[in-house]
Length: 603
Image 1: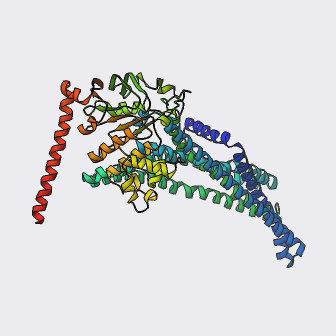
Image 2 (image 1 turned 90 degrees about the vertical axis):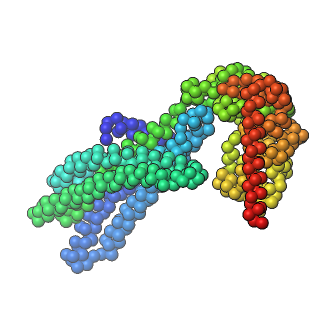
């Protein structure tokens, strides 16, 4: 272990000690009690040898009082020692789990604070690893730390007791400790890089596993099972080899570290027997010193446990700090967006680019949407529609320009103010493994009457009523028990139940039947709580329902106006929407032809 790693590792421990001063103090005091009582046990054994065991062998009898005193002495020391062990383990565990919980909360809060652009640059598996294995690794040394600090007391107390009892035997015993210290140092230098590599590989295995599970549909439909299995197997094999390498080092050094104290005990017994025979010491002294020496090896091992965990702790802590120190979190103002009426939306010269400005997707986008109006955003793939939708609900902040709701820049709105007034139904629907009610309310205190009203407006009331348990039906992970259209309608109800003043639909009804989609849009207009609606649409029937159409291409607003107007004057718009219609008509014709063929075969 390098000095730099040692210094950073002690710094990590210092963070925990400062955060949990009282718990750490209680753990160290309990460990100190254990250490002192362990040394006291050696004195108790020596006293019992001189006053109970030897008189019993020499005289053939022992008084009841002496026997009772010896038993009470050993029992009392044992009980105090057990109390120290229990307290040390309890408080050390509390300290470790508190720090893990605090770190996971801090990392999760930071994930929520950081903008979507930051999340785009970091894979989900890595984020899970930061909040999981990295947190555990960072605070792993806290479990043996109080013990290591407490046994220093035992080390000093035992060493002093040995010197006081018999300096010559103490000197014989102390000769073994330089060898133990050197062996332990070599052990740590061999083990630390291997343990650090194993920790890194755990994170990589986690990333691959999450990616494979998250992309299960792609893996299965494209026949990638063998390739994904091989990819995971290769990385898991590296982790296996790293763990085996760690096990080999431990298997080599652990017996040697166990053997050296034993050799020291033999040396003490050999010299002690010679001194006992010459009458220089008594039997109780020899028993006491030999027992104390066996104890002295243990504190060095305990310190080694802490040192062995420090490199992994440094790696885990620094990976956590990389998240906590990440910049780009969204700042919030103090302005509220009061009212229940439909919002007025304005976009001024908005520009946005991914990859630190390397990939611009929006350029000087400007538009206005009056309260209660429905505007359709139309454009070819890659024109920036979804990015604009994210900017409208402040998932991303524009590099240039501004998004204003009721004349207020969204960057000046107080925390949670945007989500209280604006709702987004994204293109990719996500449902939790929860009930229908839970997926609509997301924990808010919303009554079933309002939930059913939102489902009715989203044209989801019928199929939800037909579910086995209605609102209490669990939909499975990501809503796997529902169809794509059903998932989209529940996601729409989730937004509507919040009565948003501005509703942004990012192709949110693409899996819904066109007739159902038309009823949804008509329903939004006729609802008691009318919203300003911005919808990203592809179907001509949907676009025609909008009050105004904004046509985007290459990140710019090319034209805007009514659907019929754009069909007449904008060639790009006309080619795009008629292409969608032709594609839809061809698909319907193929479906009809296939149905006819199936009927002929069955006939």
